[in-house]
Length: 402
Ligand code: CS2
Ligand code: MG
Image (cartoon, rainbow, N blue to C red; front, side, top):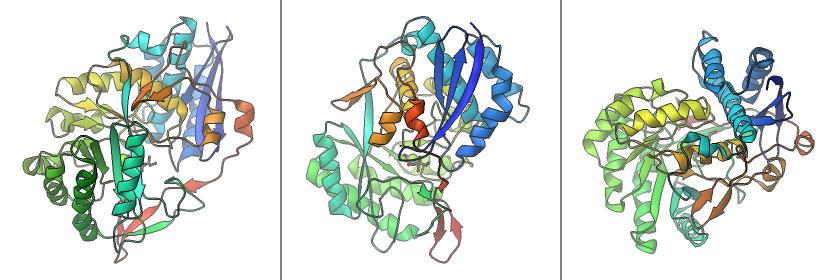
């Protein structure tokens, strides 16, 4: 079998996605997700101009060799654009291998380690009461784990909360919108949110919260400590994680579990955090961190240090990533939890898939390969539109972390 074509499909069913389709001389093809929110065309070009020409004629079964060729052969290693492009190739090659061997990909990763993949959903509200209601709605839908984000009194827009009544979708069409932020108001507010959720729903629900890179280590230590009575499953991205040693300070002050890594793209971004057990969950994904092949290595390294996975799964990761992630999630031993934000109906139409949700768990399905596809005709009906993530400023105008 040889690769005859590598096609990049950019479409926008509800939001922008970049998909790679690798075709072979035996009629089997594979798909991979290459979506990088707000920088989609950079990855599309990386694939089209610098990767696709090098794939033609290669044996698609040589997944590890092709991964190393694209990683070491680029000279300029790592980074979200490079690793998302490599990830798309990797996902597509695993898809082809599963189809060629007539088996779901998880069977090629060591088989199932559990019956289903526990997921967490997003409960968002403009204030505490609306968020509490949203938590209840998701619990009634069967989710065992719910992330809660609410509007903050005195802060006009914040991460994770839709502006109007619609679904929360972080990227906005046109140039980046600018948000104003106030850490002190946030830190006063967030313990009240979780006290209220626990008062209403008791101790059983698994509760998560995303600080979204907005604290300093000592502020994160304070928030972690203030949330200890509510026993969260994790607080996520407490601080921007370029400074991995900064997590030592958080760790010294709180037992609230820490999750980080959705913006990471290789094990080298998390090496210290894992080795020093400064985190409890690694959020890296099969999309932005080099595919199934690299995430298998990350999970194996993390397993040695009691760190579990908690992969990112927002709507800007397409159903192709969700499908590939579920094969990875169901097979590894140190799986923690998988994020799930439901895609729009247009997205699900463009990306038909076999994974399913029941009782708080996702199931990857048993079709050969990844169990997901892209309907190119439908995709063509949703052309790309420039859209960007917001830019955050403190109330005095200082650029800050979004
Ligand atoms: C968030 C994401 O899902 C999460 O945990 O951090 O919504 C993130 O803001 C987006 O994926 C960025 O594109
Ligand atoms: Mg996050």
